[in-house]
Amino acid sequence: ERAATALRGGRKAALILAGRALRAGALEAAGRIAAATGAALLSQTAPRTARGAGRTVAPRIPYAVEQAVAALAGFEVAICVGGGQPVAFFAYPGKPSRLLPPGCEVIELAGPGHDLDATLEALAGKVGAGPGAPFARGRLAQRDIPAPAGPLDADTVSIAVARALPQDAIVCDESITSGGRLAALAPSLPPHDHLMLTGGAIGIGIPLAAGAAIACPDRKVIALQADGSGMYTVQGLWTQARENLDIVTIVLANRAYAILQGEMRNVGVNRFGRNASRMLDLGDPALDWCALANGMGVEAGRAETVEEFTALLDAALSRRGPFLIEALI
Image (cartoon, rainbow, N blue to C red; front, top):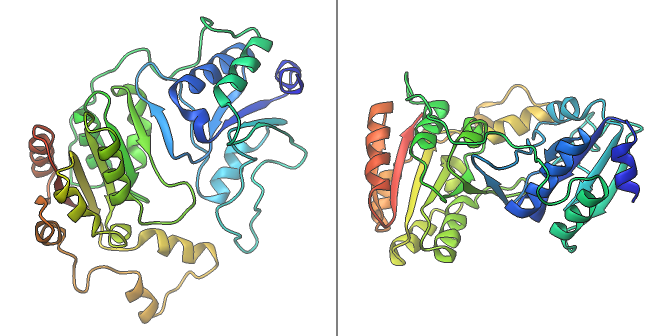
């Protein structure tokens, strides 16, 4: 009742989803609430999110503290479903840990152990947005994505993946600093599930894809893997080969720990000494992901241009079994 009253009270409100609240059914109910009340719909980092044309879009609160604070500025009430209020991933010197603005009323409606579908349906009923009511969504239907052009980089890789994404695919995303464009394109794509780590660590990508492929052998799994974090669990490629898992792993090889470079700056270190720089660099010697994959029984190919990448991706998606593409970006 308190949440419904807050949504009807005329204040600037945000409905912030986390965890299982980002599955298809709960997400639709949240979309109905947003459409009926005018509340902004946002999400925290979640292990699994239903995405694609016809589905409600809940933009993710940015990872960077400054961007997150800006995205949440002005809200007078925040209703959290599936998790607590949003906080920064780390305790950065001189930066806030609490991301909502001072004075914002926080209503933690339901946590991870609750029935989030039932919670959101109950709230929807209270605000006149029951089943059958209009719901906020990104696009009603899929649309064609223009072909990527220019050098092979994080954006053109994302565009190529978006154009080729199969219906009901599972995207396992550990692209870290290199995958933001795909999220922006998601509302135009076939319905799919997006999986990622939630806690700010790195190394989950390859085993996450293996788990998804074992759980759903009838669905194509596409793993977007940053090269630095991939080295934490590279042995998972052997499991993919051993179990003949239907996974296309795309290694975004910028040959640097770009996320760790960013975290150094976040704690006030803007100039790195030689040894610190070498610890965050993957170019001496350069990793050979094709050789690593082949050594564990996974077929692989390297792409240095958009055309090479698109050809490898089309070939990998047309067959079953594990395949790795090293995209030099």
